[in-house]
Length: 160
Picture 1 (cartoon, rainbow, N blue to C red):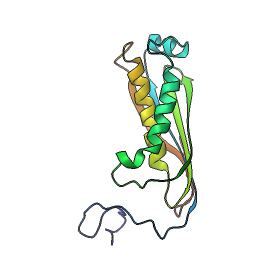
Picture 2 (picture 1 turned 60 degrees about the vertical axis):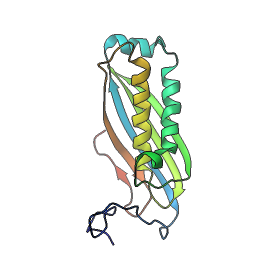
Picture 3 (picture 1 turned 90 degrees about the horizontal axis):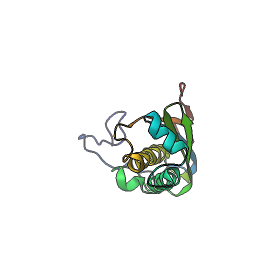
């Protein structure tokens, strides 16, 4: 039994993990994005491969994918899911780096939290690897862009 509209709270208002045993196994996909804003000097060092710690984007990509696979250990009420795809892509914008994380699986619940966690950890890794150049970078604009599968149907953010 849950509180009306809140699936992770029981009738006493206590948090619990939703039972997904009876839900159909369907194709699930989510895409999230986030950005890290930095100074022109840091941006140039990153975009030209001159960061002091080496391959920033390679390390951030691997860290984000690892985070996707460990999301249920980080977010208390998330289910462990059989991830079939996790990817992190980067795009240089004016004064910022954008990261996008796409996750998919065949499962009883969605992968939105996995995509959001993956993009967050990828950007935190970029910060860690560039903090010798700049500590004033700002991580933000983390959001779900799309999701497919599940009872609630598809979702697409209207403003990207």
